[in-house]
Image 1: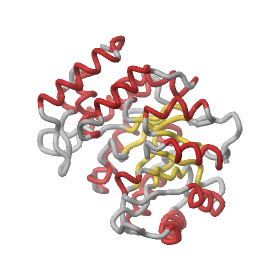
Image 2: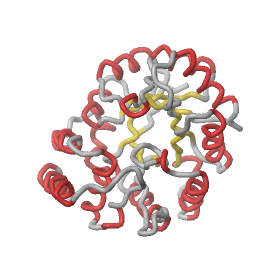
Image 3: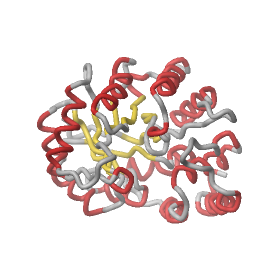
Length: 296
């Protein structure tokens, strides 16, 4: 249960850099994770949507966790892992990999293959995953229905939180729907309500939100921090989101990371995602320089 004054802060949904041969670039990953912490991020989430987690296998995940540990990042306080699988066994294996490594917690997405499923079925699936975990902790439920096709409503969130008190600690709402966010904030003041859509972030914080797991923190954490810490609106960030949404989001975020740090090693994606075309990358770079000028 979240204490009244306890906040999650700004977590980065870390991008995954790939080398020319398609392998994860562990050196670049570790350096970028360290840079995000130095820029003000309080936690790192690997294997989320921005990190292309659904495209990463167990061996890759293990190597990435090991790389962050070797880089001196404290897994117990800093590092969460996204869980994205359709089978209970695979989801539990992904979660246990993080727990066995001593990590902080997991971002648990619902099963995404079958659509139009009842809340009861989603509850049984998610409860079964948690029950199969060794020493489960820090479970954040992941509501991103535009990707999974399976929404997590407030009633389902409450049922899981009651079934696993102290284990289910929050929700990441990446729906981009203020009605959903507002309902979660009103119904679950004892949970960390985190917002993935930067356009709603400051508003959510002003209404009691606990922070964010955020893709923009990869390349402009210092600009996002006022939104997370004080609920301040940052118009340039909101405008940049609108431009980013004209393109595939994860490749777009990676293009912005590459531009911000002048490092083309961040552009590559894992299939089925493709890198943005040069014209799209140029549009995003120009928008970033115009809208977030202090970070050029």
